[in-house]
Length: 372
Image 1 (tube, one colour):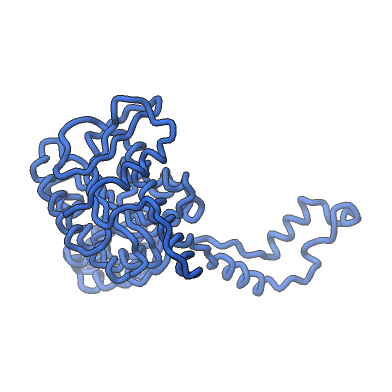
Image 2 (tube, rainbow, N blue to C red):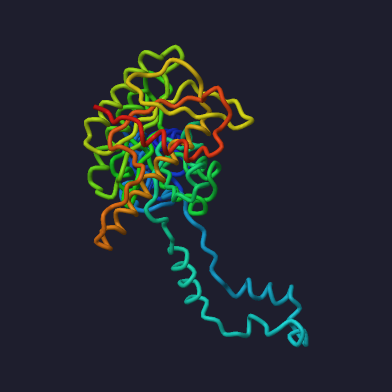
């Protein structure tokens, strides 16, 4: 009895560190029983419980750790509907035939409901945004959606992503995952056309460190992106490092830029000036070639988002023009284009927004010299 009690207490103690999502997706109870049988709960056992989420083989959008409730028609609900709709007695003459008399095949209707729930329209040729919960990432996602660019988001915190951007599939397709996981990255990148990497670390250590978020996450993204020829360009947002760990942060930001330049993929590195949370009237957006991190000025995230969205649209227009020219066996028209390798500094100017801000940005981006 004493050994059994001790085993049960250890097993219950181990459950305190298990995410609720682990229970929702099943399979955890088997490990709990093993721990009870062994009379111990080791740290490796607890770690295995934390990682037992159905993410390794999951493909497509959605949250693999959240069970989707599917309503299935049933006799009890139809009976309640008949009662509340006054269809009994002579009421059917006014309110229609009783549902309970229609001899429905509830099993077949339930199967049909499950099949309909599995159907999902996935937005075609999207821009994948990594780090969409960061200030710059949020504004880029919203600006892209505003301009009718299909947006895909990968987020480890699925509920937060739906809170920020709406229910999965409404405004954007939300994919579960983290940049530290190659399989989840592969799932999110499959079918994507562009990548906007805006993820940032906040500490010198841990899973949210500068190295994990700014550098290693981008390197893994580039590794997977090379599997998909559909990727037109990678846009890296690398803001100025600030705060007590600025030196460490800048080291990994610089390493991320070097990795992107060496990847062989078309890219644009956006170096926004100091983040400004000022709102109000539209402001001038200055875009210039950057050979080093800018030390002056400020930029609002909404204005940087305009630059990123303009780059996506310029690439889209150029690609469609090339395709149509090829189909018609004609010369490709001379259009303003984004160079394959480009580093840009983005800052708010002293003047108000240009009368045609989009055209001004297109000209500024197209005329900047490519990286050497």
